[in-house]
Amino acid sequence: MLMAVSGSRATLGGVTGLRGIGTRAGVTSSPAGCSLAGAALSRRVRGPSRNLGAAVPSQSQRRVTVRAAAAEESPPKQADMKLPSLPQAQEKPRHVQRREERERQQSQYKFAAAASSTLIGATAVWATIARFSWHLEGGEGFPVVELLLSLLFTVGAAVGMEFYARIAHKSWWHETWMWALPLEWRREWNRGIWKLHQSHHEPREGAFEQNDVFAVANAVPAIALILYGFLNEGVGPGICFGAGLGITIFGIAYMFVHDGLVHRRFPVGPVANVPALKRIAMAHKLHHSEKFDGVPYGLFFAVQELEAVGGLDELDNMLLAAELREQAAKQAQEALH
Image (cartoon, rainbow, N blue to C red; front, side, top):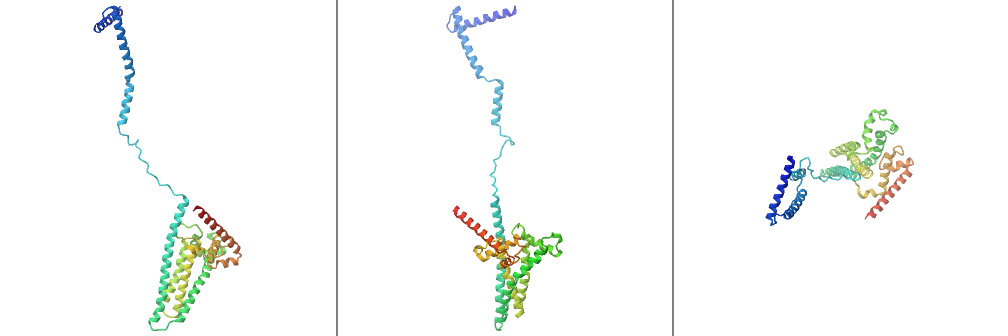
């Protein structure tokens, strides 16, 4: 009952409102006018209601929009910030690194070799001139005999050092007759010497090696002989002076050929193309190959040592192979240019 009354009241209210709208719009309050006014009102209300439903966002959409705007306005967190990556230096290829390391070691040893050779050579020349000049200043005659003996022992000491180096290299540094035995079976006195020289038969790390101590050891008697002959007069001191000069000359030549030409510890320039020196260098490489029980042990007479053990054919084959490699490398270099 109550619902029916309420519905009738709502119907009457709607009719009354329609009549008012119709009256304001200039439409009569007849039933027909009321019908027209109601239809117009229905079209006006239904149209905007559909547009409002599509345009007005829902509450969840408004929350998403607000959060997105807040995220855009707020600064990024430190954890989310990515620092620009710095350009990293690319690692050089292995062959480039090895070449640069080899050039650096060559420069270091070349400086040491040039400095020591220049100092020793200049000192020897000055000492020779000064020693014989003192005789002339004192009014004495020129010491011809002493000069000849000094020159003779200079040449003799230089040549003799080659044979001394061969004997020392074979019997003391390697001790050939027990070379193949384990280290603990060797003689007690030889173990330390072999350990020093062994560094020369292994890949070198750095510009210097333990074997270089033998060059210093051979320089000690040379300096002692030169000092004794320089500070004293007479034939005996003159002979000692010449012997010291011979050892010095041999040491400089040995370092140039052995360290520079054979083992390329520093560049030697066009001297490396001299055929006789190339044979000497290749003969010493046969010593490191141990194909003939370590022969040759000498340096400047290494070819003669190989001839005595029948190793000249192997030497010629190695020289031919090295020449072919040089020609191939030269052709490849010319092709690049």
